[in-house]
Structures are given as C-alpha cells and as structure tokens.
Image (cartoon, rainbow, N blue to C red; front, side, top):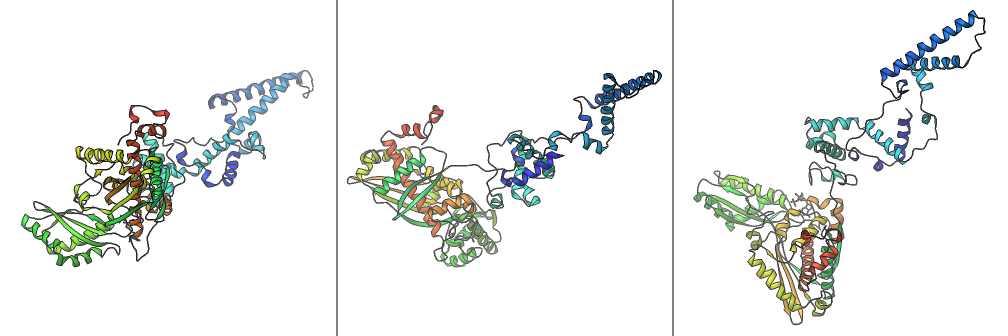
Amino acid sequence: MGYCGSTRKDRRRLPSTELPTQNDNVVTAPPPPPRRGSDALPLPLYLTNFFFTFLFAATVYFLLIRWGEKISTSTPLHVVNLSEILSLIGVIASCIYLIGFLGVDFVQSVFLRSSSDDDDGWIPNDDEIDRLLKIESDLTSEEDEEIVKSVIDGATSSYSLETKLGDCKRAAAIRREAVQRMTGKSLTGLPFDGFDYDSILGQCCEMPVGYVQIPVGIAGPLLLDGKEYSVPMATTEGCLVASTNRGCKAIHLSGGAFSFLMKDAMTRAPVVKFPSVRRAARAMFYLQNPSNFERLSLIFSKSSRFAWLQSITCSISGRNIYPRFACGTGDAMGMNMVSKGVQNVLEFIKTKFPDMVVIGISGNCCSDKKASAINWIQGRGKHVVCEALIKGEIVRNVLKTTVEDLVELHVLKNLTGSAVAGSLGGFNAHASNIVSAVFIATGQDPAQNVESSHCITQFEAEGDDLHISVSMPCIEVGTVGGGTQLASQSACLNLLGVKGSSDKEKAGSNARQLAKIVAGSVLAGELSLMSAIASGQLVKSHMKYNRSSRDIGPSSQVNR
Ligand code: ADP
C-alpha cells in the first residue's frame, strides 16, 4: 500500500536518531490492515456481503423484468428510465464488490485504491509522519516484539539480552519495553537516547533501561597550591554549588589554599579461619613479620604493575584473623587491584598454613563503604590535609560574618556537637555534600562517600584572620577504571586536568591530585556553610535557592 511506500521514503530522509524506538511507545498500535472491498461499508463483513448479494439479485431481477416488458411492448432496450439507470449502477457496484471480495486483485487495484495513494505529491503533516513512523517502527521490529514477549514470558532472561543480540542499545530498548509492560508503569521521563550503552557493558551497570540526568554546576576557580581549578559538582541540591563557589572566592581573595597528601593506600582485609587460636596467632605473626614482607609484596604485585604492597596489619578475633593489606594503586581507586593482590597472597599463605580457610575476601576490616574507626584512624585511599588563611576583611565582606563567631560555632557544632552525637569521622559541617557532588561528576563510586567524607574541620583565629583546615584520611578516588571512562564523567575529569592515567614515572599523580581537589573543595564548602550558619543566613538562602516557592513546607528544612 501507498502508506508503506511513503513511510520508507520519510524514514530515509530522517536521521536515525529521530526515528521512534520501541521505548517511545508503551504498547504500539499494530499496522492497519490493507484496505479491501469488504471495507466498502461500515458494517460487519457478513452484513456487507448480504447487502451486496441482495443488491445484485434485486437489481438483476428488476432489469430482467423490465427487459421482458420492453420486448413484449417493442420498446427499444436502450431507452432507460431513472429506476433502470439506478439498477444498472447497483448491478455494476455489487459485481465489483463481489469480484473484489473473491480476491481478484486487479479489480481491487483499479477500483479500491484510496484517493491519497493516487497523489504523488502528497505531503504528510506532523501527526501523519508520527503515525507513519510508528507503523514503520513496528514493521521493522517484529523480531524485537517477539523478544520482548519472550522476556516477559521468562523464556529469555533479561540479563542475557546484550550477549544474545550483540547490540547493547537494542538490548536496553527491549528490556525497557519489557519492564514497562510487566510493571504496567511508564518509563517516560527516563531518557534512553543519547547514551553509549556499549561503554557500560561489563564494567559499570548491568541490565540498563536508560540513564538518570543530574545537573552539573561549576564552583570556582578554586585556587589550590597556586593553580586554579573549575570544580564540577553533580547535584540536585540547590545552594550547594553557589555556596561552594562563595567559599572558593573567599579562599582565592585570601591567596589560595594549600594541600598535602599524607598517605596513599587502598586497603582490603579478608577474614580467614584456623582450627585454633594458636594456629591463627602463628599465621598472624607470619604475615606481620618484617622479614616476610618482601616476599609477600612480590606475590601481591604479580597481578598488577600498579599495585604495590605497603603494609599488612592484622586484627584477631578468636581463631579468625583479619589481615588488612594496604597498597598503592596508581591512578585507579584500586578496589579490584587490591582484591586481586590479596587473593595472590592468600593462595601463597595456604601453602604455608594448609588448615587456613578463607571465609571471605572481605571481612569488613577493610572497611569499604561503611563508617569505621579503623578507616578514621589508619586511613583508606588518600589521606589529604588542606589549609587556608582567610583574611579578616574577607570573612566580614565576602562571608558576612566574623572570625570570632565562626570559631565559636565551630567548637560548639563541629567538635562538641559531633562528640555529643557520638560521631565517627563527622567533625565537619557538610563534607559529604561536596564529596558526593564531585564524586558523581567525576565517575567515582558514590557509595564510598561514606568513608571519603570522614573529615575533621578546624577553624582557629590567627590574629584578625581565620585559619581553616580540613583533614580527610579516606578519600577514595581514581582517574582510571569504573565510571571514570564514561563520556560525561571523563569530561569533568578533563576539566580538572586529571583525566585518565598519569605519566608512567608519576603513576597515580592524577588520582592524588583529584583527592587534593576534593579536599580543597570541601574546605571551600565548609567555609561558606559555616559562615551562612554563623550569620543566620542559612535558612534564608535555602528558601531562595534550594526549595523555591513551589515547595516550601515542613519537609523543606535543611538537614545538616
Ligand atoms: P579498580 O582497581 O579501581 O577497581 P580497575 O579494576 O578498572 O579499577 O583497575 C584499573 C585498571 O586500569 C587496571 O587494569 C590497570 O592495569 C589499568 N591502569 C592503566 N593505567 C593505570 C594507572 N595509571 N594506574 C592504575 N591502573 C592503571
């Protein structure tokens, strides 16, 4: 039919990104059936058939009677009255219908084509184009439709679509459609197009159906160690970027901040079991014996040229030990790398202590993604300290408060208040706000925000000025691996000048620099938020930038 021809033409004209995908329609309409003679009347088929058969019989019968009369009265046959003309039309129409119904295509093609088909210059309007593209989409995705059904039936497992189809985007579209149909809920609003589904396969996310958009704002320039950084922050919390930006301004006007990396070691602590405390203690002494370290270190590093063992410290609980391995991981955040190294060592230890049973490669003394004193005291990832001396006039003019008020607030909030609350690593105003926003923007593991946000902030008066510092013992970041290689996250790392792997000689310098930037940004965030609280501006500014007039209610209070 002409519809299909026109659709193909249109499809060729449009770029593929403009074509509708399965996901655009929860349930797409089936293509209309081709028009046939039986569509001549808006009646059920049997009534239409009955009508035309009756018409044919009645008109033929009438004409035969008339012809008989004419012959008997010697009237010429070609002299016809109106009723005979109408009867002739009825005979012809019913003949066409009946021949067409019996499937004689020639008759259909000559008499039943729609007028629009005859119009070569037909230009569809927008609605028609949409409808036609939908039809085309269905026509070309019959196979996809079958796969969607088989996912819904359970005959095809959703997780295997990428492998089976060899096309990540198509797999995601089919899964999305299946999810919508199974749940009866629309995913409209969750974007689908504009994402590279190949880039996350086997690395970042399984069974994708789309992606979530998070706005990225820029705070800065942050003047850190004499260099300016524009800090990308992915957040949906109004005020956060503006506030950090104000802190950056105060730091910049005061000559900048300075950062120091105290330690760089990712940790992993398995739990291993022995038949007795005596055997567990023996193994522990073996692992901690300095004369064994070099050997263990070589074994540890055999799975990665970037992983180098720095220390092993063991904890013991009855006949179970928790050897905590700390190692450098270059520019990678390093969890995979350190886990592989630990596995190498455990295999070796097993040859020395065959009665050892590895209960788990992680025994929670690591401690990954959980608040723990061991991280707070010994550190995990990058331990960074950052400081700035903020001039008294900047405190008054930019931060709209005084050094005295800031110091008093700091003592009673960050130190005393946190102690009263029994805080673990939470001696700060909102380090996790900045850590999370920078983590998400730069492709870090957001769950590691837990320990990466451990921070003790200090506000101390120095003459008329304010000395501020943040000490953060567990910043866990990388510039290779995980989400860092995805396009948008990679762009944010690029903005900071720390994208990817650093020079071979300076392996790890990008990741270390990123950790320093995180700490510098936290310093700016602490300075600004504390000033807002000290000057009583916090709620007012949040009402203006965070909760907008559309949503001011009891739940819109600031949670810090
Ligand atoms: P993680 O260990 O952080 O979970 P991966 O498992 O992706 O991350 O490991 C990082 C990968 O990147 C390893 O295969 C490593 O060899 C590679 N790599 C390339 N350049 C570097 C670098 N400069 N520092 C660390 N790893 C690097």
